[in-house]
Length: 116
Image (cartoon, rainbow, N blue to C red; front, side, top):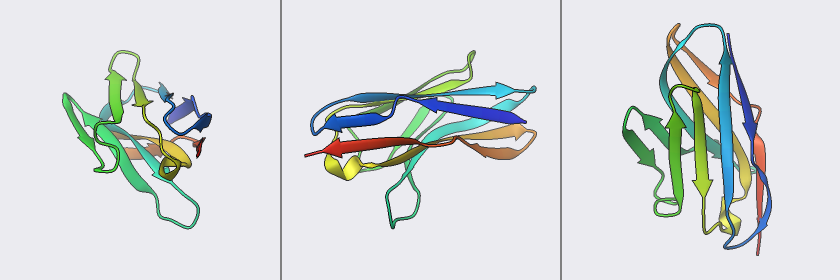
């Protein structure tokens, strides 16, 4: 069993920055993919960014503004968010996909609110 603990959310003004962190812990496991998703009220959860090995994938809406990174030893993933816009307001969820055993885990979510 894997536990994900998120931190770093908060309230910022448009143009500001936040850095989200997610640490995975628990019994022995092998990570396949780590990423960040977000969900705004009334909308489905959407992909923000994922990292798999040295490959990063970003949603078009955040390209050039957000940066995902990971520490494979610590089994942690981070999301640096710059030039935040009100449209970025959402609950952000950390996601970890393990290969052994094969399973998907979600963090508890952290609120990001961007004021105009």
